[in-house]
Amino acid sequence: MKKKILYVIVAIIVIIQFFRIDKTNPEVIAENDFVTITNPPEEVTTILKTACYDCHSNESKYPWYTNVAPISWWVKHHIDEGREELNFSNWKTFKAKKKDHKLEELIEEVEEGEMPLDEYTWTHADAQLTEEQKHVLVNWVKELRAAAKKKKEKKTLHLNNGEKWSANAETTNGINEMIEIIAIDVDEGRVSLYSAMGQKLNLKIKTIFDQCTMTGEAHEQLHLFLIPLVKQCRDLEDIEDEDDAAILQKDILKYLNNYNNYFE
Image (cartoon, rainbow, N blue to C red; front, side, top):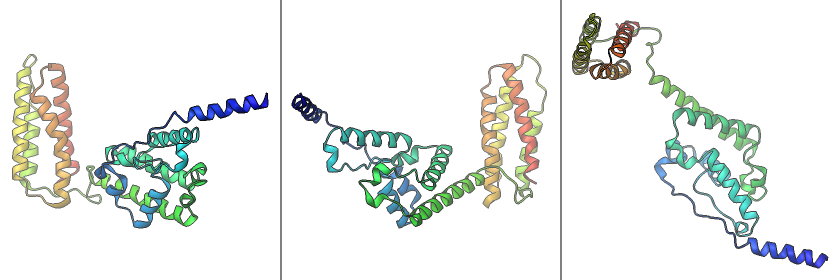
């Protein structure tokens, strides 16, 4: 009886060897890769490539034992799960919010000793991070998050250290003229007047861009103010519904009046 059971077990082991895993890695596009984009220090790059990239990139390496089932299935499952959770090879395709969230998770996982997995370090001793390596990796990721946050804040309309930005006279006059255009009352049933109003506003925005002499951060802040306005005015020019036009008119007027809160 024991021999029969043994024969069955051996037969099963032999049979499952025919069910091979797919070891083909997805294409690696260098310009999308985390390391290529962020350009970390050599020590951090080594840590990432050694302890993370096998399961969290399209550069997975399959050691000899992945030719043996069911170990091969188990390894493949970990790689598939790892890529689904975070694939460094697709970093460029992530939105800013997702990038920040993944970096936050990376910090937590490393600090709490959850990553790399024990199952991985059992067979990859070089992936076992020392406390010093954890410190180096975590600190660099924190700096990366801080730099991204600062860059994002720079792209958000804000004051100049609590003071208004200095604008050239042509820009301020142009904004005031736009306010006069958008503040005109439109009689009911004259939706075409809203469209004409949007056309005038678009022409005025173009003039503001052409006449702008502002430079540096003040210039960047003006663009941040004008870009949403460009879309609003184009929408008004193409408007067909009278109720929607009236609402958009009020939104544009409110937005334009906000100019004086940031520029002088």
